[in-house]
Length: 212
Image 1 (cartoon, rainbow, N blue to C red):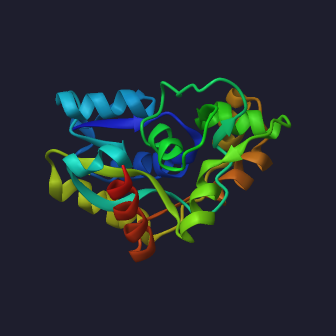
Image 2 (image 1 turned 90 degrees about the vertical axis):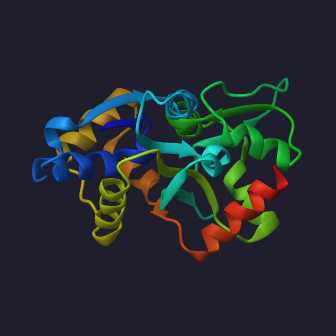
C-alpha cells in the first residue's frame, strides 16, 4: 500500500499512531509513504500513484472515504486570509475554495507556515472561524480516502478514533524545532484539531460541497 501523508503538524497524532499500528500489522512490509502538501497528495490519488491518504475535502467526493478527517470547530490557527492582493496558496485546495465561498479577498495561507505566522504575531481572518460564524458548524478540511485496500484503511481509521494518541516528548521537540515553535505551542495547536467526522461535521461538509 502506498499512503499519501500530508506533511503538516495537524496530522502528527495520526502519523505517530500509524507508525505504532504498522509495528503490529502484517501490512508493514508492503506499506510505503508518499509525503507532500495537500494539493500534491490530491493529485497523487487522482493519478493512482498512491492508494490512500488524507485528501482535501473539496476533492473527497471523487473517492470512497472513511469518517476520519481533519476537523476544526471554530478557530484552527493554521488557515488564514491576510491583507494583500488576492492570492491562493498553491499548497491548498479546500482552503482556497473556502475563501471563495466566504467571499473573502486577500492572500490565503495554510499549514505550518500559517501557524508560525500567527504565533509570531501575524494577523488575519481565521477561515475556520469565519465558517463557524456563518453556519455554527465545524469545518472539515480533509478526509481519509482510498481507491483500494478498503478493509485495511477502514480498520486504521477505526483504531485511530478509538484511542487518543500521546505523542512522545522527543517527537514533540523534534517536530516543534523543525517549525521554529515550542512543544507547548505545538500541543496547544493540536487541541484545536479533531479527527472524527461526526454528524455535525458531515452536515457541514455537505453544505460546503453544495456551495462549492
